Amino acid sequence: MELSKDGKEELALALLLWKDFKCQGKVDLEFYKQMLSFADHLGVRAELEELIKKVLVPFRITMR
Image (cartoon, rainbow, N blue to C red; front, side):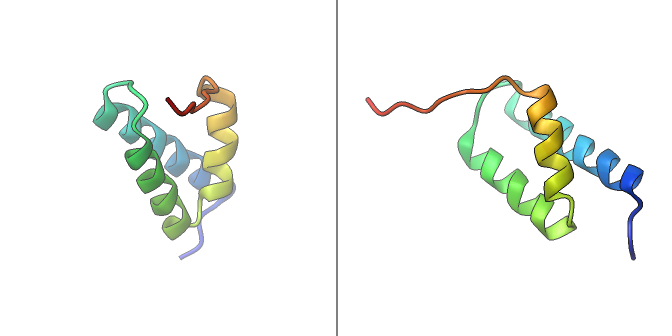
């Protein structure tokens, strides 16, 4: 089954909202990796990355 561009964008948005719900708005790198893996599996990785650029605040990981 092939999704339309709008369908892929909606699925990417659903993944992003699912991440926010599960992480309660916090940054959880393990769940973030799981979300990206799931997006790859569904074929919406590019749409998810575009949405992330628009919505999420950039963050940097620093070693202690």
